[in-house]
Image 1 (cartoon, rainbow, N blue to C red):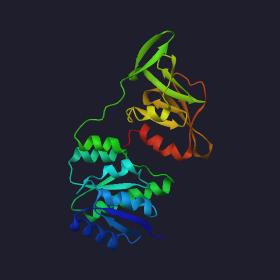
Image 2 (tube, rainbow, N blue to C red; image 1 turned 30 degrees about the vertical axis):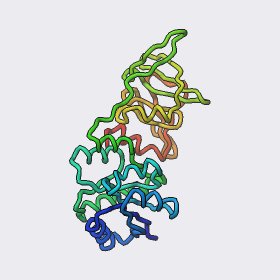
Image 3 (cartoon, rainbow, N blue to C red; image 1 turned 45 degrees about the vertical axis):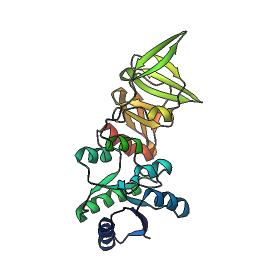
Image 4 (cartoon, rainbow, N blue to C red; image 1 turned 180 degrees about the vertical axis):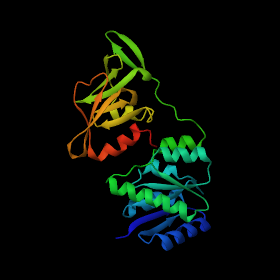
Length: 258
């Protein structure tokens, strides 16, 4: 069964070349449509079945294509086509997507499709791009991360530097910040919000209840059914498990793979 593929590109030579390469070398991908603007894409997505893969130019006639995915969260992996320099390309690679430099070459296209197929095979929810970070990269700015958290200590307010944090735990609607010296503080923010404010090379979401700092992971044990058991330092008050689905991504992060 062919995989539904959408192309978002406003330059006729570019989309003709990409469509031709897909038809000639990758018959397993079916191009269901070619869109040339943000406006067209915002109209198309609600009215059509979701594609399984998107090839998306960045600069369209009516703005940056990232605006599409800010308004409508992407339903599948995206391979961006771009003429930006290596800084931009590294930003794409870091965020778990791929890129193609124009004019698209068959070897590069094959690499991107191989990466897409690998993502699909190992997970039912392939990695999607972090649009805000990509926008920051496009604008030539460095993504800034949270440097400290303000916590309550009795009647006092205390700023805790992010570098002193070992991990965050969530339970029954309560979020706890655990420092490297074993102290615990309550936070008002949910983990989903905190996760977006942390440097992903330093902190990782292990499961729904835990975000941990890489320096505070003591030991990782292989568990049954492909799960991983993580020992933190200082020790967490509850067992911390990484699911089979998230295990590979966690090990790659721990190994420094981007």
